[in-house]
Length: 148
Image (cartoon, rainbow, N blue to C red; front, side, top):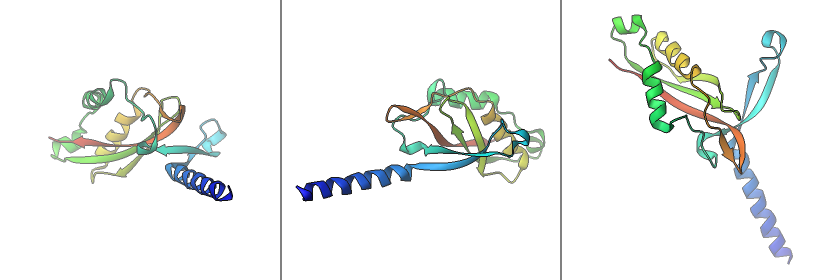
């Protein structure tokens, strides 16, 4: 009987450790604080570790259409024939809003980086991700390409 209990406890511990490995703590500025000086930590799951992944309205096809319709090639980059790909990360909150937009790997041309962040910031609400039936914040990574 004790052997079964020990095996059960071991399995429960391994499952708990595996679950914690999926969560990332992100420090964010609380926009409600004066001068934005208060920091909050939120739990954010990685995209691949949720039961139901966040979904852009219209799915992947809708996301591609949105990017192509919203993205504007910066004049300076277009004039100088600068191309590139900007790899961005952002968080889809429990309410589906996009927040915490960051550049993971940017272009040498800063105007392409700014434009990629602008496109992501204009995204509509997504359908939130879920773990165990509960909506959770999920970190997503998305490349924005600039090709002539």
